[in-house]
Image 1 (tube, rainbow, N blue to C red):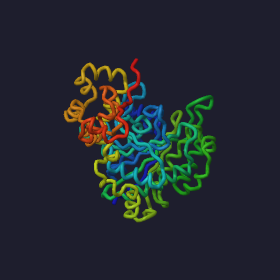
Image 2 (image 1 turned 90 degrees about the vertical axis):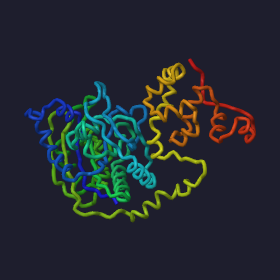
Image 3 (image 1 turned 180 degrees about the vertical axis):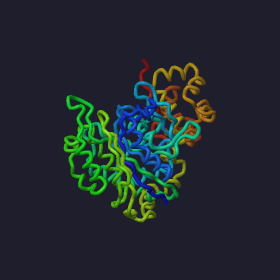
Image 4 (image 1 turned 30 degrees about the vertical axis):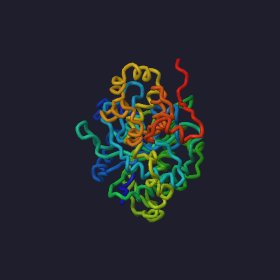
Length: 420
């Protein structure tokens, strides 16, 4: 089974990335940032986690028109997002889709509703502190894989402090029930006290910050009944994102020790770090084998349903590139390119030779087998003038007249609308 090697709490201000990318490691004004992260770097080198569960919030970069309370990154890799001036010059970090799928199953079985994402960049909320905590280089990539947990803390309403803590406890159950022998670290990011908008911008409360850090280590449950408004009053509106530190803390055992703690306030936001070592290894809330049985209860037997292919996280990751290409046909410019020069559209979509063949040959059932969800087939049908009944018949290995005989009405239809 997987083991938890400990947790890290860290600010995620873009100041950190600015200082690193600007080569300010020896500048007296900026040096305390790097000194605060040196013990964290050493901790990661010592613990060598296989996966880092990384709790952060996106700053309306990759998540703007869809803003979830809890979104799980299930993709094979995650790149740095472009926040307006181009992405940072750092390599993509590998994900762990298999581990992500297990975590998703446990969280949903424990009645946490998630959304899932891949193909989206991670903004400074992720990569700013990550780039001074975990080793990486262009040749070898990052020293561990990443499971991003994106939390919606910028829009009202947002989940309560208690909800974040309970999410963390459920994360612990998910990690400790994972059947593979891997080491997992957990990072909670954001905060501490700051406000970046309105006439209240520039607010800081170091006294509260230190009190919060102390309570987080020794009595986290005393923080659970603080309303969001109280957290904002004490720490600034954006500073209420410390609920993500509570999620990390909930994933650790009740008895921990903060073996490292730093606090530096250069400008708008404190740059703080904490390392938590478990001093007692609390057992999961239920035996791991029971958890595995429970999370699979809803789906046992589905694999025996002939001709049926549930759109699992595993299938969605495998077929992501092709699904993404087919979905891009909802863009009028991409539709035009596809109709005028299919091969050029395939190249623009970055399809593999097998994926090109599947689309080129309109191999409808082959695309399903590959990992395409049916509703992307509808997009291709709409662009190529093929109705849904034609697709259904092809998937059944029948002619359209043969398939129509199995229906009560001899009709055809599709999702195409009116072209401009």
